[in-house]
Image (cartoon, rainbow, N blue to C red; front, side, top):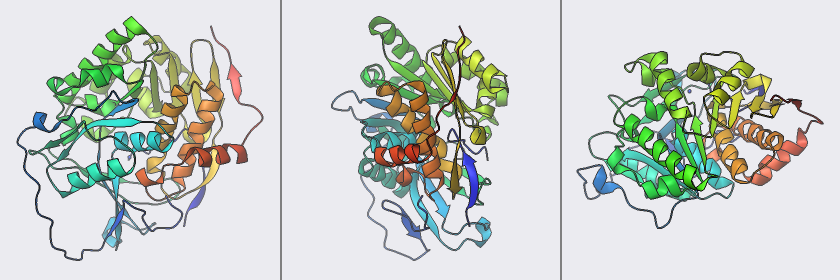
Length: 387
């Protein structure tokens, strides 16, 4: 059974939906029944040969993880006792792109998949959910990653990443970048995970530097760093210290930073929400967003500070809430929404997905978000001004 829980800021569980447990297309139930395998597609030998050029620069370019989420269709039991699973498009960046598409945006994903059946599933699911996959490479040397979780509502969702020794989405090289897409998108979204190892790390910094240089010339570009800190991805890369170093290097080239309190601490060394927001602003961003779970979400610019309260929700699976928040943040930034309205809609998106089983296929529509905001509207948010 789900439990009453306050969800604010799309808080991402660090271990990292429908109300019923039946998956929706493109999800599929896995029951172990044998089937005749599909014939393999023509094989590719290099990452670079698989990347296509989009017809035009995407409105939104999201860079980062994609893969397959294999979620149990029974809640409150360990994986060893689960009998059936649902198969869904997964990966934080892929989920964020889907969430933005659900709200009417035109996103493309820059990532990679393996030359395997799960990779073909990921590509198909992206297209079905409104995300351009032209910049998703097929990597013959690495398998498409798979993620399992356990679901213990309202607040315990252990997660296991099967990405060893590494995954295709971290094989992006600087020479693979489509700089027209990187600099021409209205909004670029990157994640801290992309900085966790080479060659992805150098490619990300090159993309951020190119976009920063282009933005200085034309102005107005929005670049978001999702402080998506996953300890497993940094175990062999220097841990928190290395993650902080990489985050701070990237922050000088972005306009918006978003993360939960632990992720903001990783980036800044500050564990108080206001202090973390101040540190992010000092590092160069124009907007700092600190997600605080049940305590709501803090948004801070250099002259405005808003705390939007959390809203109550019957939590089924909290794992996709942060990605729904991200997709709504993209939409609101491009729509130039006032900060309080922007964060209220982000909170609502996260709460809606937390009330559903899956992640990507659970992303809410604009009408669902508006209805949730209206149903939980408060007369005020806590605001203070700082010079």
